[in-house]
Length: 286
Image 1 (cartoon, helix red, strand yellow):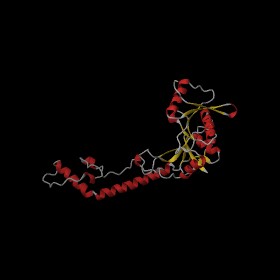
Image 2 (cartoon, one colour):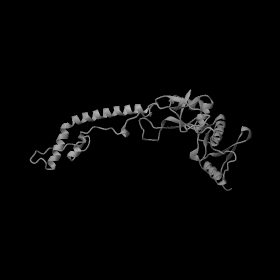
Image 3 (tube, one colour):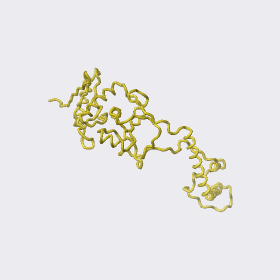
Image 4 (cartoon, one colour):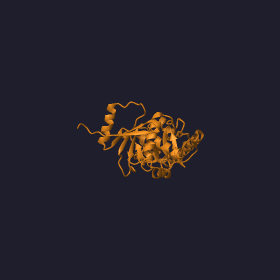
């Protein structure tokens, strides 16, 4: 059973095996939205998790191939506090060991600064120590010199936490009812979602591949085969019943579709559960 983790309306798949099954067996595309573990600062190539459209997640749930779940608190505040205290202890011990190794050099640097200020007349001039040898710049006053000897406090913002960039760590989860609206799954019952889902399932049932079409001004992009091998042929625009469709918006959508070599497909629910599809192309003035 495929697990789809939902959070504030987003449907995520963390398992690589599940993501492969979703594409190969069910012809659902989704979008990779995770950073690669070894190159987290680039966005040219992305990795897991795979984010599904709400319609894709619902289709898998209706087919009985997936279950929608949400994570519970796998790390209570008490565990977080214990982890913070442990990291602070280790960081303090490492800082103390570093200061012990550099104690002689730190003392030489302090003596050199005092000599430069004239506090030790006639003393031998010491060669300045390299700044890279110090944990932080040497203090200029006796008051500031206590900073090196003060107890170490690890900022909570510097606390290390586990990020699931390489592999998601499963924890406790509970099932989400996709037929009822909730903070994690707010789509259920919304008229716009219901229309989109009817269109999505109808086109998917006819053997097409679908992906999000917002970048082309539509609801879905419709492909005759796998998007890795084919370009989209249609831009599907879902029109809810009795919803107005201004002429200028229709002309703009049609011209945009023609300019990117795609056909605009108007999808409207009809009576008796049927769907009406109207294809439009811009021909200009003849």
